[in-house]
Structures are given as C-alpha cells and as structure tokens.
Length: 397
Image 1 (cartoon, helix red, strand yellow):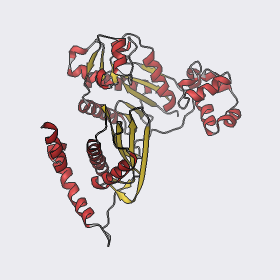
Image 2 (image 1 turned 180 degrees about the vertical axis):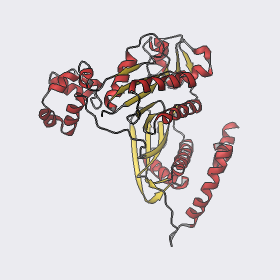
Image 3 (image 1 turned 180 degrees about the horizontal axis):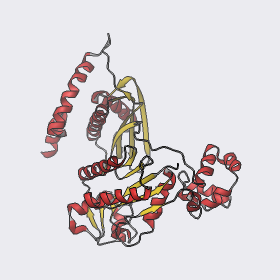
Image 4 (image 1 turned 120 degrees about the vertical axis):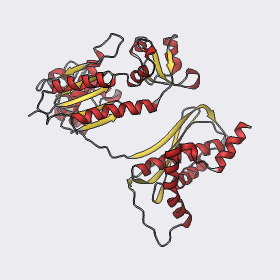
C-alpha cells in the first residue's frame, strides 16, 4: 500500500500570531523584525506586504523602500513558541509519526489511519483554523519530497493578498506527472550550481531530467546524480523521523553597531556560554569541542575551535575555552559585527569523579544545578556575576 504523507506549513506564522495579538493588523502591509536603522531584517511579512515584493530575510531598510507605509512589528518569540507547541500538539493527536522541521513546519505519516489522506489533511487544517485561528497549508502525497513540493505549489497558486490556506493533493501514481512540468530548481538538492550544470545539458524541467539516462547522471554527479534521477521520477523512500539528534548547540548575536570594546565582547561571550551550557544540561548532553565565531565589519567571518580533554556542559568550561580563542584571534580594537559560541561533539552527559578531579571544577559542577533552578524560577537576571553588576553600574553612571 502506498504511504500517506502530509507536509504542513503555517502561513506567515509570525504575522498570524501578531494579528491575534493586535487584530488591527489584519489586512495591512506589515513585517515582523528589526528596525531599518539598526540593520534589522524581515523575519516574516504579511501577504499584503508581499504584494510589494517584500520577502523574509530581506533587510528591513529595503522593505521600507518597497513599501513606505509598511508597519514594522517587533518579534514576540515567546508567543510564537507557545502557538507552535499548540499546533504540534494537534499534529500528535492525529499521529505519533511527526517530524518537526522548524517552528512552523512539519511532516506527518498518516499511513496507519483508515481515512483517505486528503480527508485527514482537510480535517487537520480545519482543526488548526478553528481551534487555534491560524492559517496553514498542506501538501499530500506518497512521500516527503512530493508532499513538500505539492505544498509549495499550492501556496504559490494563491494571489489574493491573504494567507493561502491551501491544500494540494498528488494522487498515488501521479508523482512523476505532477513534477514533470516544474523547473529542476524545485527539487531538493538542486541549488544554483547544480541547476547551471543541468541547464548546460539542456535540462530545465523535472520531466526532462527524469528522461535523462541515470548512468550518465551518476557519472557526472556521483551519488547525487543517483538521487537526482530518482527524485525526478517522484521516488523518495525517506521515513518521517520523529527525533533529530542534535549535532551542536550555539548562541550568536549581531550587534546593532560594530563593537570594539573588549570587556563588552568578553561579557557577551560569558552570557552566550551560560546559555549554551544551560541548553546542554536541559538536553542531558555534554560536548568536547568549543567553537568561536567572529564576523568583522567587512562581513568577513572567522571561526575557530578547540577540543577539550573531556566532555563538559559547565558554563565556566565553555567560557574559558571561548575566551582563550577570543584572546588569541581578536586584534584589540578591531570592529566586531557578530560574535557567537557553540559546542559540538555532543554525547549523553555522564559524570564520574576521578582521582585527580579539579576541586574548583567539582565545586562548579555542584553549584550549576542550583544556579539553573534559581534562574528558571526568578529569571536569567536573578543571578549575575559581580563583574557584570559592576559593569552595569558603570554604564548607568
């Protein structure tokens, strides 16, 4: 029996949540994101704004030029996370086979349910529309590849200036026919460079790619050529994966204005190290590699990393490694646009007291859960280091 796969995408999700918070925004051209005079970018924009050519990830200054009357709304990520959790709860009520791709996107495998896939999709869409007052679009097919592309096609067919709330179904056996007229760029894994090479062979549609000899594609592209040949025919056996293993945990920030102040950069590293350590402990993980990321004023990006002697999830360990990298690779006075800290080489956290354990590290390990609990109860600012309090007082003076 063919599988029944749904791809769900919440339409302009951040904007839909903002319209719930402020109904006066409905039908207006607005964007969620940062201010245009502070290097802000568009995180999401309403469909009314999209009619002016505004898109996500566009600099807000550019968006305002395209639409001078554009309303700019600050992000409220706590509301977005809460709404996303409500949506994902509805998906899990339908099936346990849910693969969440992002805050507003997921795959579902409903093959084990007796109802037709289209009926299940319409019921799910109606549930999210009525219970959560959120628009969403769905693609329905026998595999993830075609379901995702179907959703993209369904959403793009709507030009009303309102959320599409689309539903596009590809019947079993019609996968190749559905894909055939679409440009090769619609396939996963076909970026600008691959598309250019395919165009050089005279292949511009997925149907033309499907008819090209598979052996030649493998010769030209290796394993990727094999995937291209199968995907062009609408074949995709990948399962819906219910959990993703984290490969790294990181925090970074882009400053409103370039920073040359060493103590401020170090304090930013300290806070980021605390946030990364906290996330590691919440997930029950430790890591062996600490990475520092720096972006200069000219957008040149530098990444450096160091491997620790043993895995850790302690704030102090992470900060010490990040600070060592920072002091080694930051020329004093050089303007910094972005700074970030990450930990990789993750594994399940396990602690064993050794004969030669560092007493200070042992004290830090015992203190860390207490600090986490206090911050969870009273907020991240409830516990601060003396150096930070001194710095804040100096800035206020």
